[in-house]
Amino acid sequence: MVAVARKIDDLTSKLAAIVGERNLLTDPADMAPYLIDERKRYQGAARAVVRPGSTAEVAEIVRACRAAGVPIVPQGGNTGLCGAATPSENGDAVVLSLARMSRVREVDPLNYTITVEAGVILLDVQRAAEAHDRLFPLSLGGEGTARIGGNLSTNAGGTGVLRYGTARELALGLEVVLPDGRIWDGLNGLRKDNTGYDLKQMFIGAEGTLGIITAAVMKLFPLPKETETAFVAVPSVADAVKLLALARTMSDEKVTAFEWIPRLPLDFVLRHIPGARDPLATRYDHYVLMELSSGLAGSDLRGLVEAILEAGMRQGLALDAAIAESGAQADAFWKLRETIPEAQKFEGASVKHDVAVPVSRVAEFLAAADRAVADAVPGIRICSFGHLGDGNVHYNLSRPQSSGDAAFDARYAELNRLVHDIVTAMKGSISAEHGIGRLRREELQHYKSPVALDLMKKIKAALDPDNLMNPGKVL
Image (cartoon, rainbow, N blue to C red; front, side):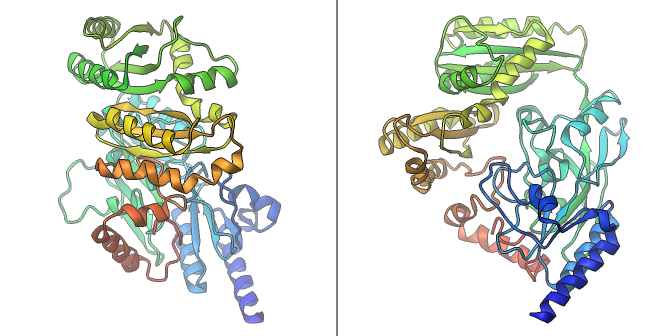
């Protein structure tokens, strides 16, 4: 034990020498915020939290930890929903926080790219692009605290996937510290590069298990000059999907977002979120939040939205609608959508799913899943909502009002399997944008094909033979 303790003390000293005493946290109170996940589901422990300020420091830390045989848990904004950035309970790991690596290295407006370090907050990436009359389109509820490295490590989606794609599709190049401490400089802003394997794709969505993303080159787009937002009542989910197809056809792909909101989650928001108001005077069962944008000023986007809604009503695809008359009203519409998870917390225990099926099968999935969970737990409250435009449904379930939290929590595994069986039968995904982490690790083993799992394990073993990069996550 003395030899082990000396080895740990030696590592701590080396880490302090790399980043400075003030950026090495060992006091339990100082480390506490880094050791628990966003949902308070996982509480870990760690030898230390180290906060490098450069890629070179990250590389030195990795080499020191590898020499000591100590695992590393990379962490960005610690806003993940699957426990991927939380260390295990045994306390053997070092948490490597990238929060200090928050420089925007370059904005190239003519190449439509921005180069940022992994610790840049997503909202700051958006603002840096906007300062150059450009748009960085990745947008999600936690953008004020989430950091771009974490967004890439989980292949974040958000509300703009329909038009702009996921984080994977927005990334052109990466800088990565490998498990052996080498730095791979893949930072380029090329749209075309056919020189062998596209190495960056290995690290996007890998949740820090193959290496540590330290910087990225991301795509930019023309900054919208006009944006129109409408809150639309629709007869059914199937009709909402048809309205989406109509809007895409009529607008020449100007639809930026198309979010589905049923009545129950809207009621949760109106009940629990201060200042929330129902946009329509009449209650309906289903709504969509539709946003269109254009890079051209004076394009009469408002007229286009009105034409889409008129056509939708003639075809029976829309029942009622409110078009935002100001930016503040558009923000109020979006607040109704973005605060659903917060509002659901007030309703007791929940089981949450982040699934995707083909857009054409969303209505079929919801009908099958609703029947299955209602049969299993009478009185269950289905608080589903999500990114209808890309088939990503946050299929969240709240306990029956007559049930206690503990009784509902005990059904977690059963309800997971019911929902994921249906998703898999439709060739869908059990994790659309939140990742695997610890939360869905066993589910991945159950649903991923043996061939795919074998390939993933071989890649992990080849890059990280000592299993020191975020062990126990994903695989």
